[in-house]
Image 1 (spheres, protein in one colour):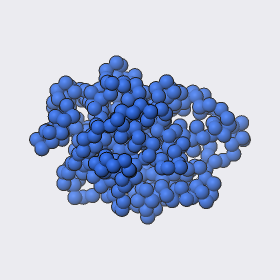
Image 2 (cartoon, rainbow, N blue to C red; image 1 turned 180 degrees about the vertical axis):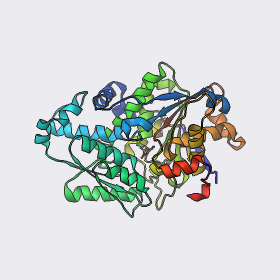
Image 3 (cartoon, protein in one colour; image 1 turned 90 degrees about the vertical axis):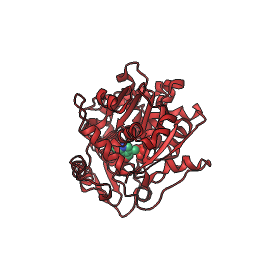
Image 4 (spheres, rainbow, N blue to C red; image 1 turned 90 degrees about the horizontal axis):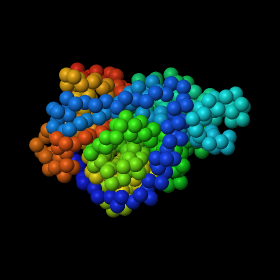
Length: 399
Ligand SMILES: Cc1ncc(COP(=O)(O)O)c(C=O)c1O
């Protein structure tokens, strides 16, 4: 069923929340990624014909499917956090040469073999496994119940010890934390909570490379609207925070999109009572990357200050976005976008075309002059489901 709920939001625009995503300091993060063998900027694709069809001025989609050959943006965070941790042990800064330094025999001799542990819906764990392997360390990865075999296999293929647990995402995070304490492993988790904030902050800084690339690729154009999908909100907070620092009063109207089964940020914004609200239990949305029930404390501060609206929507919108991007208007480029990557495109289309959403469209000021920025955060990370959706065999009640 198509289900879309929204809440408008007015933040305090407190720039104090932006202290760790300042553009000048983030340059070193981009330089670090640039120094990794195989780094290449991912494309920012303009879709003029889709824009015309939907009645907006321009649509730009950052296509993360080619990131480091891993099919999602996530390795930006894991790789930077692992490098920060290891460089910290060596007492050296992270810069464009860090990757080479950390790969050297001398560094390895000093560091020994470190085991990094994490919980993941798939993409983050794949990034951590990849970075650990490249740098000659170990990774242990826990996936939530119901995770796809393809995602598990991709992580194991990178040499990590990985298993599908009987917990939801948040339970798998608790397991990873407990195992890190028990075995002395380093927890590299992509979400923060009180008392565990340093590494998640580094992960968010790693994500700013996407925003830095986008800024260069836009070549002076400032979007009027930004749609960001969220699980725990680390990605949305990092990107929104970077742009809020950079564009200040020209910050685009920003809409945060989540699956209705795991809409912890929406719930927190709707309650607006100064506390974080959780979603518990089984979160059975096909947007696996967004099935997280507990907001990231560090990123919420940014999102709360700068986001303009929160949307909780059903899988119908993810499927719609996958088809819009995967079977494009003639003349537009094709973007292979997975469930979590495509949901914002589906939401944008609904906002422009569904008469029942006209009020929200007007509130957000979406019209023929709008320049909309979307991030397709993953490619087809569950190929079986991707083909089902694009072939029209997927029905909302399938999942
Ligand atoms: C493809 C994809 N998009 C978006 C997200 C959301 O990121 P966050 O959990 O930081 O909100 C994830 C998280 O795993 C993801 O895998």
